[in-house]
Every structure is written in C-alpha cells, then in structure tokens.
Length: 454
Image (cartoon, rainbow, N blue to C red):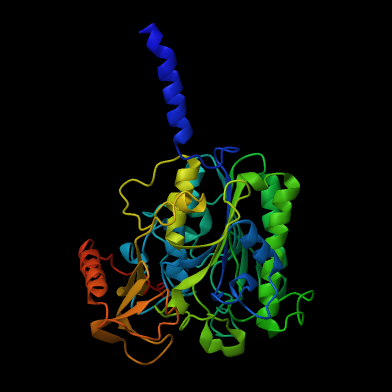
C-alpha cells in the first residue's frame, strides 16, 4: 500500500487542478451590482448609441464581458428588483399583481420576509452588505433594506416621481440613512454625486473584508436630474446628461477599486431594471433595434444591458450571446461565496460563472417573459414565442394568440416577422415548456394591491 500512496497523491492533485476555480486570489470576492432605472438596451455607447458618451461603461465592457441577451425578471420596477434580489420570479411570492404593477407611497406591503435576498445570504457568509440608491420594495419600516440583510442603507424608498410635484397628496420625497429619514424634499440634482460618494466610502471602509454593494440608481427614470457639471454636456439632451453622469459614477467606483488594489478581487455588474419608458419621448431612452420598451414583454421591455467585470477572472472577450437574467445573480454569488443556495426555495436563476469564465458558451435554456401575473412569452435558444401580446402602457386589451407568434431572435431581433407557420416543431417545443412551467407551481396571492389602512 505504501507504494501506491505517491501515485494516488499525484492523481488527486491532477483532479483538483481540473476542477473549475473562480476568484482564487480571494476565495470570497467583493461583489458590486449597479442597477440603472429605466435605462434602455440601446442607451450606452457599447450597445450602439450614436451620441451618448459612456466611456467608463464602454471600458468596463471592453475589459470584461458584455451580454447581448441579458434579461430582467419583470417588465417594470418593483417586481424586477424583487426578482434580482431573490433569484425568483415575482409570481412565486406575490409581487406580480394585476391591479398594481409597482408599489406606491400608499402601499401597505413589501418584499416578504419569507424570501431570502442576496444581501441576507451573503451576510451569513461573512460579507458586509450595503445598499445605496432606490429600494422600491416596500417603504414601511418592516420592509426597508435593513430588515432584508443590508447592514447599511443610504437612499430613497421608492421612485423619484412619487413626490408632491406629481401628486400633491404625497409627502416630500425622503432620503434615508438606515432607518432614519435625514432629508425631505431632496435636491435630486445632487443624488448621483451623493450616491457615488457613499459608494466610494462604503468600499473604503470595507476593503479588508468581503463586501456586497447594491447600487440601484434612481436614474434615468423620470423626472430627469443631472448635476451642474453634466447639464448640457450631451448631444442627447437632459436624458443623455443623466446617463453620462451615471457613467461617471461607475468610473469613480472602478477607479476606487483600482486605487485600493482590490479590483482583481471584485466582481462588478452593471444592468438595468427594465427597458426604456418610451412614452416619455425625449425624456425616455432607446431600445436600439429592439421593439417596444418598459411595460412590455417584447424584447425592448425586458432585454437590458448586462456588463460583467472582474479583472483576472472574467476574460476580456468583448461580448457573449449566452442567455442570462438578473435572477442568475443570486446562484452565481452563492457559488462564488462558497455557500449553499436557500433551502426550500425554487430558484429561477442559474450559475453564470461557467459562461463568465469562458468555460461554457451557455448555461440557461429558457427565458420567461411575465407581464404582471401572466406568462406572455418564452424564449428557447434563438426562438421566442408570444402567447399573449399588449403594447406598453396602452389602454388596448391584451391579445391572446390561438397560434402563438414565433420570432427568430438571431435573424429578427426587432420581432417583425412571425414565422410560426414555417417552424412548427420549434413552436411546439416552446408550447410544451409553457404548459410544463405553468403547471409546475401555484402562483402566490398578490400583495401588490394592499394599501395602508386609512
């Protein structure tokens, strides 16, 4: 037996070398998620915008990986944020209502505490957790960020249009530090700079330990506000000014990571909560070649920018056509932190590290497009079938299609040419998945319509 010990050791060593290893320089990497609000697929230079200058995000994409097929879990704000933080479709836990698509200042509900967030999961793994920006998952004290795993919170409880200027019955727009309101009636022109300062401070204070920073900006959601340094600097008007300032904010964060020497142990992700609010016209964004925008299950409503940056771990390969979603973040982070996934929860996300590391080209088979509580469409590979369609923010009723519409996303990203009669086998595969999916669980009762008792 003694003669066998050396070959066995060599064999074991070779096996260990062959196993995937991510972030070897820090077994628990720092993680930063920057989440824009209503930013369209076509609003960044690296996604083809002709006039908005986004040099820092363009550099981030060049040094990391840019997803061309990255999706959100819902077509509007509140459920999209819930999907990102839980790794689950909002219909599973009551945040996909019919009467109300998002939470409002008079809402009496919030993200259920039965859900496990990225923050609470990573906190148990020894991470310092911070959130800077817009919450919009319940503004009552029992639902705010500090009750969902965040050690530190600096930001606003809901969207920046939910203020007296748009509705006299609403209270002055509040700014929080943890559980305390520190300002009412915020000068929103200062928000991006203040958020950036807070983000940099959080990074500095936690540089010696693994940290998770969630930075959901209030912008470029309307009303638009940019600081004096950026107003009038873009050829795209105030909308472009706001996006340029957000780009600057990203640049400041990346610079701080490099200055501190922790860039190679930090994963940074930039994405958006849904597509652009097209009805806002010049104050709304662009979907690029994609059809429709926010509030729609066409591509423009749910396909968003997705940039992943981690020097030394994510190869600077430019772009990937792999399917990915914001719900994939939780299982990806759990893998990187070396912790198990939440017990007793059906997750709708998958671990993206095989794609991000360049080891695999694809890990996700399906994308599900929900509008509120109804499954409108499914994508498999290049094929997308629409079972129900409806224009965004329209008074028109939803249209159910007896024969679902079928589009080839590779040949027709604008969803102009229905080819269901030409590819019946591909359509049948997606129809079977639709049936399997809707029969696999019972939707939770909606909490979105609950209001604060008078």
